[in-house]
Image (tube, rainbow, N blue to C red; front, side, top):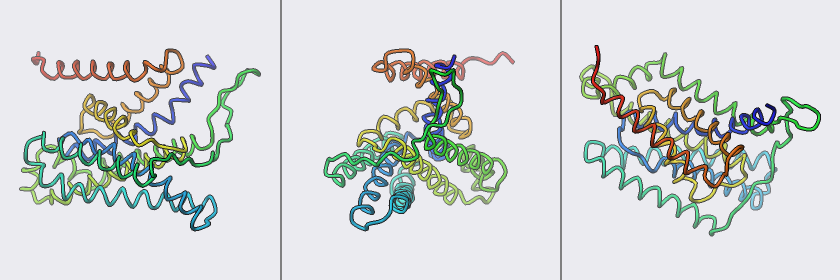
Length: 301
């Protein structure tokens, strides 16, 4: 049971990252209603940017470690806001009314461009942050085996959970949340009611991009490095998760993504890890098929 408890705790951090990513993705795509492949690219690019900015601050500006980490986080979030605004105005707004394939092709190009920018900026080198706040916190022990999480895992999980809870409360009780639901349900009717649909659209995509940037920062702080291709892997997983749960409930998407992160950790603890992604993608595909069949089933009422 202690081993099972440890595997569950191992999944808590991944669940927080997935949940934050899914919340931001659903927030934007509830209005866009198009596949956004660039979302994972923003996640990976901001993580890489945080590391590169931290390395520059430490080696060139001679900042202390806390100051250089803060400098890297600020630069990464600024890039997240910049790319989110650029994408919403230069890509999504002009193409939102056209073919869904146009958005897919455009965001795939943006994803590849962000991956190449990260690789070129790092000169194809992997830069690593030093281990930080890695002191284990013991939750249970039987003398020979201790169930632990590190301080950085607890902090990252708390930050991600706080952002998701705050965002869910904002959507439930604020004017922006009411406008967001109205535009997601019927943008034309919302516009007739006097809602500035363009403002809601750009604001939602900005918040979603900031969630992706923050998730990239948290992942980079924990792992110490974020690969150039991580954006595609994480982006596809979040795309499948939100497709199963629907784009119109960011809170529910976050909960589903967190459950997916826990399931991944349990698989890694009990089964061959090299088959983990294949089986998890298969599970998501099966759930997507079942969800589609349930929606198409005739009503008995």
